[in-house]
Length: 343
Ligand code: EPU
Image (cartoon, rainbow, N blue to C red; front, side):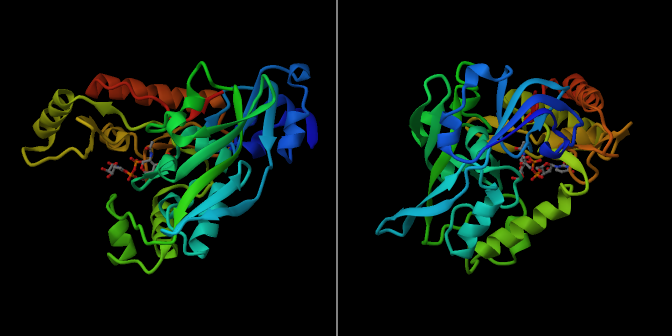
């Protein structure tokens, strides 16, 4: 275990905010975590993964905990080609995707290259290209902070929804720390190619293996998302809003009045409601590529806000966020909600 006081978090958050925490504790096993005297730590306590989906809005007065519980192992195989895989919460999620693809195991290929670690993936229900974490999850194994007891949640108990989970609910948040997850992957081919341009990027309807789909997804992501090594960001900054049909019809009418009767508004069915890509609205409002001091709206994917110069202060990102929320509200009557957690 490593412990630092007054710790600089800039290398620990992908937005590269130059902020500090009172204490930073990094543990290597569930046993080390269990042995921690939580009450004696500077409060509050924040369990963090790769820091790829959060925005520190200032110095953090408490303790940041980071787990390095590694390990990927096959726990069991089923006669129908199912492969149960356990992965430690500290495993880099894309390392797990690469591990599975290299072994011909289907299930994680669409989630390739999403930044962050396995534990955070389970909390956040990460998703991309028509697949979410919940689609492969079987169990999430946790430590309950108050009692130091181990607790296993079956996927049905995790209340997963679009970027939502039990672990994010206000009454549960912070109560559990993920130790490992159990996933169900498959030796039988289960390609999911229907989302967006994945089929076109792949160039075939019948990929030989999950590694082919993984490569296509990596190509798409690299073409439109900032390289984390070069530009600080936290991926999609906002969630895509889900609105009633009537509201969508009004947006469509507005767009046709502006662009002509043939104009279309991109959208997806969301169980009787309509999901509208926030990226589309942000682009229509002229924000794509906009620079605001040291912050900017990413030029190839406006759902992503970036620390453009590397010197952006939290206030600059927050001001840009506010501008976008206000503009979308005013024009489309939709309140955008950040996907990125504000700390
Ligand atoms: N669009 C534009 N202009 C742009 C880019 C996109 O109008 O410059 C419109 C297009 O109509 C496009 C649509 O937005 O079809 C959707 O764009 P994209 O496929 O890039 O996905 P997204 O809805 O912006 C979501 C996830 C991403 C995930 C992609 C692909 C959220 C909040 N984000 O973004 O997840 O990679 O779909 O599945 O749901 C993340 O969470 O950090 C993340 C990257």
